[in-house]
Length: 124
Image 1 (cartoon, helix red, strand yellow):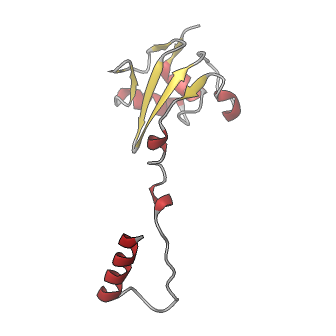
Image 2: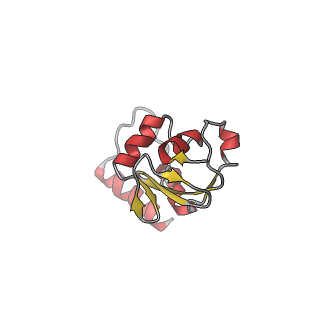
Image 3: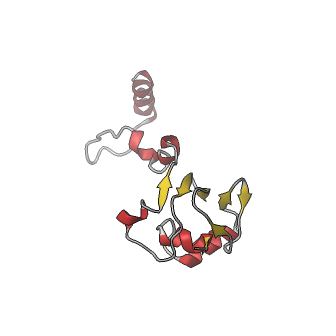
């Protein structure tokens, strides 16, 4: 079965629409074997697909080409996500920040308070 790369990426829910997948191909954001591919490129089982969705670069391996769109749970039967954990961590950079509490009405910290906060955070 011959399936186009844009249709495959739409079917396994990497992109919300086929036109978005086609556009990504035309912009060079879909890479197979170190070569940017056109939307009409045929996908075969075992190929490694790199999808650039800034700030993350996803990597997938095709298990089995599929033509029709499937549910999110079933998509894993047709494509395997091998994206490194470091790449996925780029999605939510605010997860590692420290949120402080400041009483309501106290306004922004003064220059002196800001330095004290910075010194405290650098030690921790």
